[in-house]
Length: 439
Image (cartoon, rainbow, N blue to C red; front, top):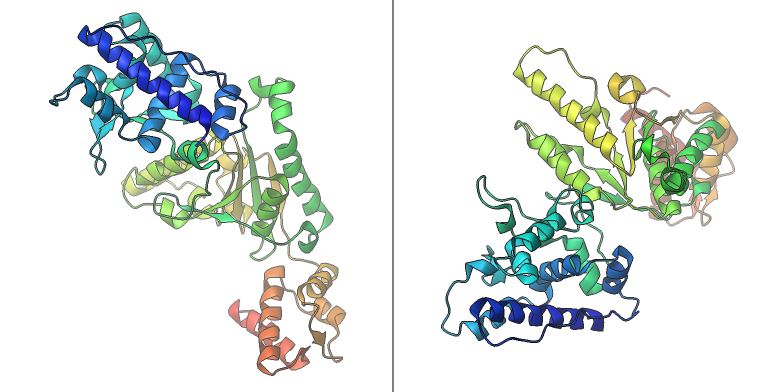
């Protein structure tokens, strides 16, 4: 643990003793000095210095972190002042579902900074948890929602789990696909040269790459944030297997941004309001992370709105409208992928900054794909003329990868490194059959 964090937690513990002594009328305790953080280059120190936290914000952050690094601290100090046990409502706090010790609330922060009677300080502290504060905007530290009618400050103080990891482990682990996170991170060992595209598509992808690289400068240094909406919305459309997913993955790889493919089947619910709830949770998790959100087969979720014939149609249209709103508000890059541009809702297509078409590869592009896909370890049967194969068979890059995969396995099974013409054409036939096409 960072020495700065250790000293900071000791300061918080002494501050708690000070407030309890004053509240109970016990002999005065020396006011603890706010620690001066040394430049130790740890995430905790960098965060406090970069955010230029005030004393109020610093104490609130520490209170949110305590349950994760010194979970018994509040209970131990309370035991010093109340050795026979007992409740102390002024300090706030709640019990968890699994953890039975003290968990701080907004009231806990109020008590630490202003005691239980200082109304002005209480209002000052309340601003820390307001929607306009950076803690809330960036979902760093916030209060858990309470039941209607209960004081807002009685909500449990929650430090985002990613910041808990950052401050304690020194890094943040990438989220994995689960019921709570319906998205999967896309990664690749391929390079841009491995993606064979026509010049127009490459040029349009470069436009997206330019936005990723220069957006912050455009918005803030050039002060365009007053005129432009945050984020960038791109539509990738074209036949299956033409490189849309790979292009999105490579954009993330070469700009240093994580790419997450959204599992639409996990997002969409038959229950009214659940789809919106799922989308909201996803976008809140993604906000301020500089992630690229990739909605594969997006027309299933962002498709055309229907004429309202019954209640189901009305709620379906509400879902589409909500999705339009959330994607527009997202400050990062959203890529929607569809086989046909015409399937997308017209109201949404007008909001795309760019629409990138991925056509079927031409013969010369298919030749390059064939040449790049066969591994160096294999030899081709002299009867195979790849140029002729590329010209004759209209295949996507994905088709070609499948065919080469099939051929290599057949060669290995035959204990040879030569790709036979027979297996090559068998592989081509398999792909055409899968797609109900005739050679």
